[in-house]
Length: 177
Image (cartoon, rainbow, N blue to C red; front, side, top):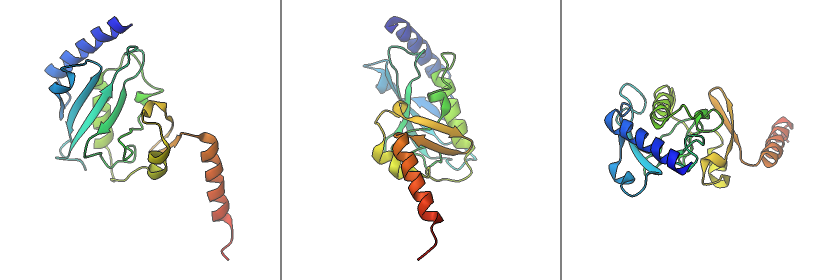
């Protein structure tokens, strides 16, 4: 599988270099020594909340790619403030986990991220950002995401989260003293 992953990555690398998605540029230095870790520089699309802002995406590929999704996250000094992007750069996007398909590519992931940012109506972090960043795995693929519409939840430790949520709800339902 390592050979097929390498061939696929070479093909996608050439496609990204020759026809990058709008506002995306491969950081050529990132692929000089390894084909399994790419940095892609991104600029917010014009007419959006992120217009003119610069971001960087990190793609990490296993030797099972494309049958295994890449690990994708924002990195660097400027992490977009977005309801689906945590301050550590983790992105809650279903095609990066359970909706991944070998038919998808780096370009299609980039387009999905551009679309996600471009459709944002309000710059804000996910409601559980602080807790998630303190407790999550460094690899966003290890997170078990819950997807439901515009709001995002995660479950790093479902039992703890359920207990915590129930305690909060119980406190809110108590009459004031």
